[in-house]
Amino acid sequence: MTTGPAHWELLQRSRAVDNQLYVSAVSPARDEDASYVAWGHSSVVSPWGDVVATTDEKPDIIYADIDVSKVDEVRQSIPIRTQQRPDIYELVAKQAQ
Image (cartoon, rainbow, N blue to C red):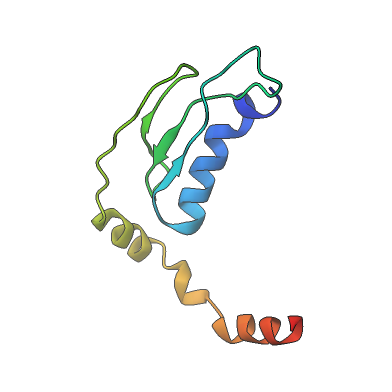
C-alpha cells in the first residue's frame, strides 16, 4: 500500500471541490494476501469537500443522502464556471484532429 493513508481522502475531497459536485470514491476492501493491497475507505464527498459517508478497510456498504441543491449553492458561492473558455477548448480540439 503506497499512497492510500496519505492521499486517498485528500484526493476525493479535492476532486469534489475542484469540480463542484458530489464524488463517490469506491475501493475494494483490504486484502493483505492480494498482489495489490487496497486502502479501502470508500466514501462520498460533498461539493464543499465534506465527507458525507465513509467506510474503513473492511468489506462494507455505504449509503448517503445527496442534496442536489448543495451543488447549485456551492457553484453560486464560488463561481469558477464563469471563467471557462469553451472557445479555447474548440481550438484545441480542432488542432488535435
